[in-house]
Length: 410
Image (tube, rainbow, N blue to C red; front, side, top):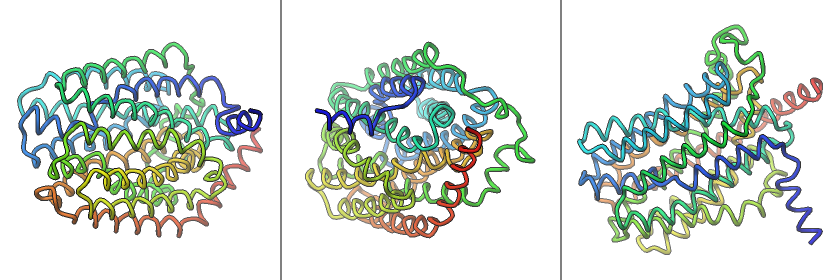
């Protein structure tokens, strides 16, 4: 028992109360994340849209996120972490509810875009809050724990959502909206404002915040690599359900496959994290990208449920490796006054990838049986791994400088 306690403390011990409040709110929200993973199926089955039109509509979520995260990053630094978290989640709940009531094509498109615009406002605020309250040596561990909470909730949502979707989609929208507001309530009641005073200044480092980010070659390179990795990863939530449907697998089976992802993260991440934290961030991100490339290859030759499950397990290992490094690393790269904006720029890569993937992947997928999108995604993942390994020296130099600065301030 003592050994188990030591392992649990090494994984989750010593983190501040504010972090755990954020963790709990995230868990509440993700348990109700029903709409996003089933949106393509909802549009094709409940709204009778073609696969091509559904792909365009789904891409609007990513398109809105391209706006959402940079906007959220600026609000995080200028207005504050707490109001951005609360306002973003309430707006997200209202947008999801509106999408559930939309019926015409244009209303569905507009509400989907709105979901994308407001849905990720909270993410830069969440990452900046962690960087504000968690010591630099624990940030990667804290980001990993938040990632674990996301997937604990998502595994429940994916399995439950698949079962609920088989009986109609209305309840999915209602529960998703309610849990967004639940997250806002947790933040409002339990999380104080953590923004450093200098973050309120619109001009930092000699120019507007995002201009500073764009001049930071290391940050731009890392964001570009993450964009490439997410292009491959995004296929799981955008075109995989369409490919599975083409091979005779329904919404409940897709829900089961996706639930494997969350469940495997819940079970495996606590075991893998101590080992992964001994690796460099480049090793985590690059190795994770190679695993995702392998998973894309498995999907390319699969049409049975077992093949998809194996592919998701491999994707999961890559996702755990990537998440162990990426969130904490962007916080180490960022100066304290610009943590929100750096997180917003990093988050933009997710939205951009989820915007591009259904548009390009849907075309390459054809009738659902083509292996082309999976082969392309595998190639992109391999290239991103090579780029991350090449960037390793610069990353380690920046991390050492950030640690030295934090020690000097303390």
